[in-house]
Image 1 (cartoon, each protein chain N blue to C red):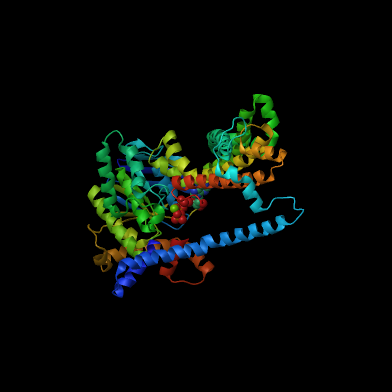
Image 2 (image 1 turned 30 degrees about the vertical axis):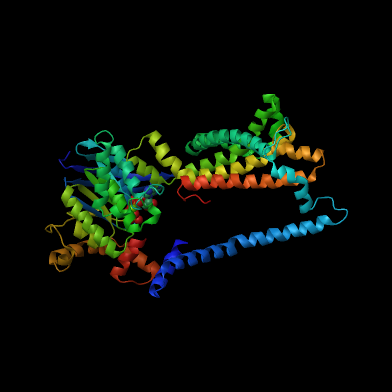
Amino acid sequence: MSNAYLSISQVDMSFTRGGTTNQVLKNIDLDVQRGEFISLIGHSGCGKSTVLNIVAGLLRATSGGVIVDGKEVNDPGPDRALVFQNHSLLPWLTVYQNVEIAVEKTFRKTKTAAERKAWILHNLDMVNMSHALDRLPSEISGGMKQRVGIARALAMEPKVLLLDEPFGALDALTRAHLQDEVMRIQSELANTVMMITHDVDEAVLLSDRIVMMTNGPAATIGQILDVELPRPRDRIAMADDPRYNHYRHEVLSFLYEKQRKVEEIDRHRGKRGGAEAAKAVKRA
Amino acid sequence: MSHTETLDRGRLIGTGEEPVPGIWRARLKTMREVFISRVLPPLIVIGGLVMLWEMLCSRPGATLPSPSQVLTETWDLITDPFYDNGGNDVGMAWQILASLERVAYGYSLAVIAGVGLGVLVGQSTWALRGLDPLFQVLRTVPPLAWLPISLAGFQDSNPSAIFVIFITAIWPIIINTSVGIRNIPEDYRNVSRVIRLNGAEYFWKIMLPAAAPYIFSGLRIGVGLSWLAIVAAEMLIGGVGIGFFIWDAWNSSLISDIILALIYVGLVGFMLDRMVAWIGNRVTRGTSAG
Ligand SMILES: Nc1ncnc2c1ncn2[C@@H]1O[C@H](COP(=O)(O)OP(=O)(O)OP(=O)(O)O)[C@@H](O)[C@H]1O
Ligand SMILES: [Mg+2]
């Protein structure tokens, strides 16, 4: 085995339903170092969530496996927290209680009640949600829900943070704000992060490495891009940085030249420019 | 209400008027609006129907008493609901309370057993396949059809009545609970796995709250059916209770008493329904339709 902190080796995944088997992932191999920020990018339906769910332990790979910190992943564990694609807050619990349910479970034995309370408040503060502790999920905006989802994951003090399109459904301003927050939190806590995204700028801005997946069925890793931009990164300064634009171009050309799914979408929906097509993929 | 209030205050301060009387004026205004839009229509309709009833039943040869006649004939019953002359001869309040007591026993048992079985059927496909056909057949049996068999079994009228309530109320509770459990989004299950809740924690913290809106709609249907069934069952078993009161009044040709009892039965049934809906609303924090 390699000495990486998290390693995904030889993972194949197929789903069988009603006698028909379709292979979603084929031969996924990836080593992630401790404290590294990895983005997974690829067209909709290629199997990104499936990869993340396997790492989280929610799904079992058909063959191959995942090792985190020397231990094989078979089930969800306290070392890996997942932020779901659709936030998945429990609608009958308040913002505070949604974080509390995870904290109570994780730290029941190691923290006192007062420490747990302070820890919950601290994590909600970290995502700037202290003002809405007693609101129900139905009473807060999509961006706020996503932040609570992130707080819930962070509050478990995971070594690996798994983010499934955490900002997918947000407007550009909220998204930028939360990206900055995630960058700040990651630099503070030095978590290992795997994040799925559809957004090329987001991937380049946040990641140490961008893992680009080919289209399904039987998707695999097509290319890995090292992003060697100094941290902390500033989105405004980055806009004029030629290296930033080079990385951006690399990812775009992978997605829209080497993996030609966009053209199919274009044919279905009429002609669109590149940026428009990217949005279409996001919505799909 | 508070919305109108603040809007109004803003306007009044803007015009430099003293705000306090404005608040009261606004409050009175909203109260008047509520009265006109909510209270007045039912009052008018009910008043009209009572008048029609009065006209129809005041004619010579009318078989049913008119409202004024009902009122005069039952005045003693209305004004003294708590008299107790021993035996079955007790006030209306006691009659209704006796029925409510039976409903309370039968319904409570139905809630416990119904939610339990509903969870079982909702969770286990095997239990669903095994029990569902049985449930689907048994739930169509009319409540009163259970009475003879339960009399035969219990050899006593009171437990039989309670059993009829139980068996009537349990089906919608089982079915709604199991549907609620089966409809729990996969996401909640994944959340509970990621934060690593164990079986009991999953049951109390995820499963019951997630299914609560469905469970409460079953509970609401159940309480309505219980009340329907108790009145009918009591007619047959006798003793103190609003159902037998009606039957007794019929045997004594006290039609006005029957009408009064029907009004009470309706009102109590309505209150039971509202009560369960209210509890459901509190428990589910407004996520259950009520
Ligand atoms: N539980 C399942 N059973 C059967 N097929 C599944 C299951 N989960 C995912 N799939 C299939 O696997 C493929 C990949 O799904 P996945 O959710 O991983 O895609 P994704 O890359 O995350 O897409 P998106 O970007 O739209 O979220 C899809 O074709 C999907 O239909
Ligand atoms: Mg996905």
